[in-house]
Image 1: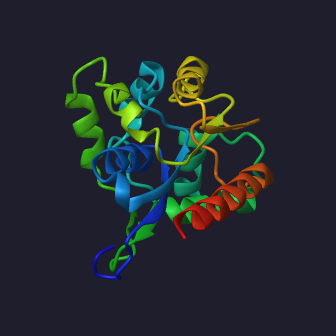
Image 2: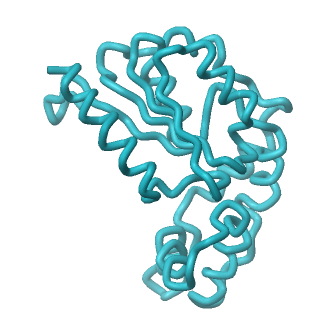
Amino acid sequence: MDTVQAPSAAFIGTSMGGLLAMMLGALHRGRVSGIVLNDIGPEADPAGIERIKGYAGRLPQPKNWSDAVAQTKMMFGEAWPDLDEERWSALARRGFREDAAGILRVDADPMIGEVMRASPSPAPTLWPYWTLLRAIPMLAIRGAHSDILSAATFARMKAEMPDLTPLEVARRGHVPLLDEPECLEAIDAFLATCATTSE
């Protein structure tokens, strides 16, 4: 931000990115003009954490793009139940990359799974930091069938931060894709408010 001379910015954080956005807001409130949390909050549901631990960094290397699509469906099929084949193919190409030798690899740090499996259970929460974020405009998005951001945690987030803008997305688990019409509309409106507030 300093390099591009941005005194402040709004952040959209999905899952782990949302955790980082919350920490950034808690530690550098003056630099954060707004936060959009995508299916994450101060506390993660243990059921979803265990699901992710089960596959992160453990899936076999796909032999081809059809395998990559199949793995993507295996990981996210319940979260995104209404996607067509073209969309699944596009999402697989976001989640895997082809190296110089033409071998497909997950486009993420494979050690993320090991770090998650080594972390204490239950996972630590960010509730102590939540009150530090009250001065920052925030939009919180939850997939209606999320196994990471529970309905109870979502309700507590709203109760403890009355100015929070909540949005629950039907037919989505962890995580909403953010191209759903209701997400686009809410994010555009929220970011416009952040821009006005920061002027």
